[in-house]
Image 1 (spheres, helix red, strand yellow):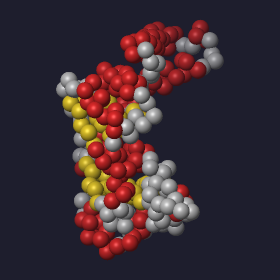
Image 2 (cartoon, helix red, strand yellow):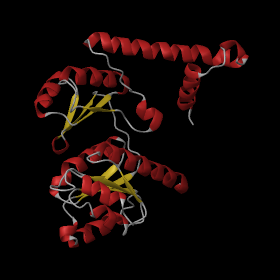
Image 3 (cartoon, helix red, strand yellow):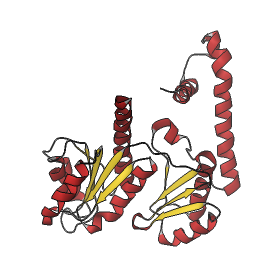
Length: 284
């Protein structure tokens, strides 16, 4: 674990431990306590400043990506525009970037206007937005994530996963509309994907949710099943797809919840980034 990770662990121990301060070692008291107390005070001040400036209490986690490899994503669907702006501003101040998912169409224009001084990238199909400070540089990890959708109706959720994987530094290759209703469409694109050292694959599917099991039975890399809320009748709204993926007989398939593109993208990217790191060390 790096120094930043060690400090965070020490901070948690300080906050939750039952041992009195005077019983800790002299070195801990002299070297760690001042730094940890300063960090606690700084985080508290940041939270209070964000709350007072907007009138809305927010506690943005700008250090999440440094701590665990996955950035914080603002879930925009259930938030008012002022809440989104307050959280996004805190993330911009802390990390230089704010990612917003499931942005309501009426909120998109307001957010673009509020952050017109920044670089704003809109992923229309996913209803997602990324705001960057002018000096922000997105790192490249060398990880490679493949994203496959069964049908065109699954693309919005697949695009959400693609956005997250890209923001986590991965190269992303998308293959869309190759579901089991015309399985011959899958063969050549999948062969090409496997020839490019893909590290993890996300497969988005609604209806019967069969495609992730098919792909998992053919490839030697981890597959993330992403059920989408496409379907009707008994088992509709993604329920049949989710259950089918959970009942797969193809080993190597992991499943996220219905329409959870953020979860699928972040999981695949974590895998890909670890593989890329190992690959880099192996070639040195």
